[in-house]
Length: 196
Figure: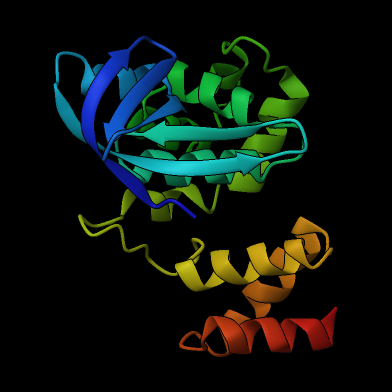
């Protein structure tokens, strides 16, 4: 998994950024928020999320860890894919999006192109208690309990690769980490395999 890329900004548009690092140009899909952060810059560091499908290998880039965490939370909601999450993050900056979801303002979400009232309500219901923790991320990107840690992300990713459903894997990993928060990724995976 690519955590971030640091390098020269070769091309920048409101939806795409090409960053060169050691002679390789990485094409990243970005939100308007990220575009605003990198506009006019020659160099930068961009946080990355990879989406690997049968027909494509896509990279999504984010100016901050907070924005990436919100992207991951949004894509965890049924019916919200990577492009829809990027559209939401383009329409509402991270701090505003956290306030909209935390306050239950689904009407503001329906103003985003492609988001209907049912999807907006689902986002609010699923993420209302989770977005507050994203707000309290520190500079190193550490999250307060309740938001997926690297251990949780790694364990869930491994379980998905083994053929388990994402939601089932997340529930199992979350319950295991509540019992023993300091468990290693390997231990969480082993215990989750016994549960699933």
